[in-house]
Amino acid sequence: MWWGETPVPLKEEIERQTGGIEALSRFYRRELSVQAGTRVQSFELAFVDVAFPAMLGLAPQAGDLAQALARPDALALTADMAQRLFGGQDVVGRTVSIALRPYRVAAVLPDRPRNSAFRFDALASTTSSAWDTRELAFREWGHHGGQLYLELAHGADLAAMGGACSRSSTPPPGAPSSSRPAASTAMPPKSA
Image (tube, rainbow, N blue to C red):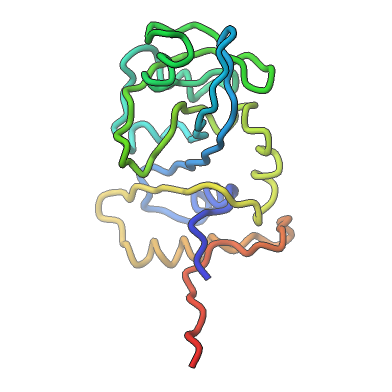
């Protein structure tokens, strides 16, 4: 069976066991409520690793995206979300609240095309405290909910990389796991 999601700890296993990778990032999206002053909005917050912006060619229209992804108490808003929360896009340095915790807006990003596979209203670090299930996700191999993207180094052997990634998707001995299996490319047999 194939799951469209990967266990969060897979990134570290691939880094440990595999060469030929230029960049690697998780993309774990959650729908949360965010507050700025008296305005409350539902939004999609994507938790990503620091390599993510370079992999997609993302550049902020204001602020410091690297800082937004380096700090657990910071985030980057899209221009549309900044407008909805604050009534404008000059918001770098302002504060929003998620689950009653403050987060500093460190950058504003251009809006993504509506047909993008990477939909989000804000980006935050995979170390962000806004990721309320983070500890479980990083500890348990059966916890799914995001994607893992990798960019191969020039000249990397794609077949060898596929085999290495397949081997890496098996939890290491003793790793906690839920009853849901890790991602697999094996398809169930067709019934007669």
